[in-house]
Image 1 (cartoon, rainbow, N blue to C red):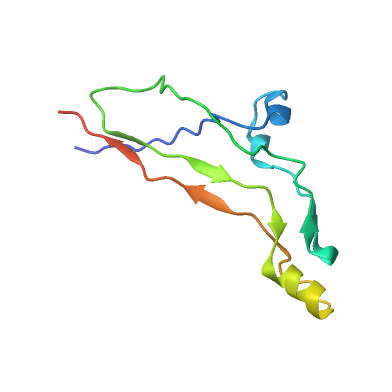
Image 2 (cartoon, rainbow, N blue to C red; image 1 turned 30 degrees about the vertical axis):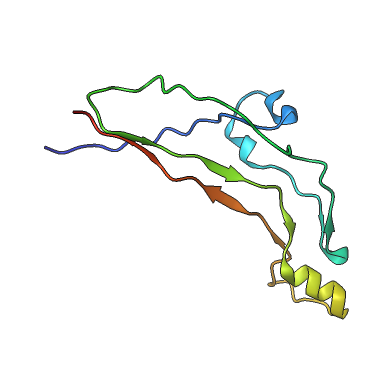
Length: 113
């Protein structure tokens, strides 16, 4: 028997500023306050904590399923920006000066009996 795997991407929690906008996939652009020249950033975007709940409206108890969470942090200076500032060097344009950390949780698996 052939099984199909479907992916449903759901936004469960975001910052209040983004929540006020019409829902869209542009939520994943969180903004960028990095000042690479000074190896600094303003923690004025995003939120210190996010809490949300999710109910899978497409859940079918007869089908296997899994869920997991992906998290995006706001961009911050990369180590190259700190080194450039500390040692007074100019990095070439191909050197990334910012980074955006990501996290993925362990999945929750459901298998029908």
